[in-house]
Length: 159
Image (cartoon, rainbow, N blue to C red; front, side):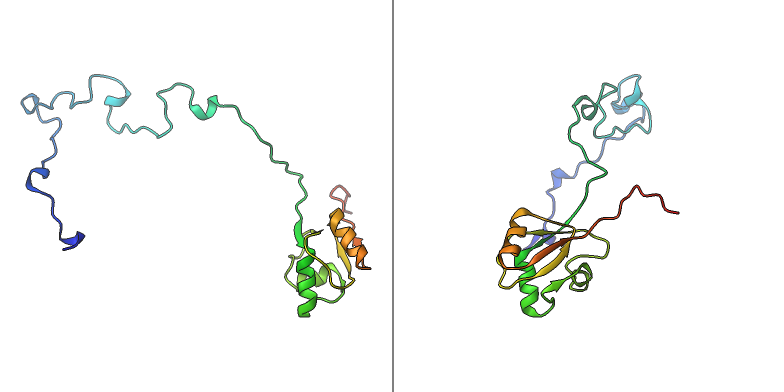
């Protein structure tokens, strides 16, 4: 026996009440909808958030937060990731943005930020758009350099 063999018991199979079939049926004239008003009309459906015309909850509550349209997004690059790629031979010790794109660490046109998680086993020279203080210290302690790539200005008029 499983769920496909189950049947509902006989008293559970009640016929639906037929609406609007005369006064003798017990559900004629107004069909259980009362007299007038929006809810008595045909085609009436209520949206889940509708509150009968009063000011809805989502408009009564205060709004909060802010999404800055001018935010600068960076792709995070941790030092341990750069070190692993160098050990596997996918990157050299001198790294440019094009090398990062070829190694699939960033996409073309994205901004890269070097972060200081992990340790460096050799000195590297790397080009990035930004670097954290801890990353800068770790690269310089290993004998390497970080070159900050200048970003193109959005407000320069193109001729």
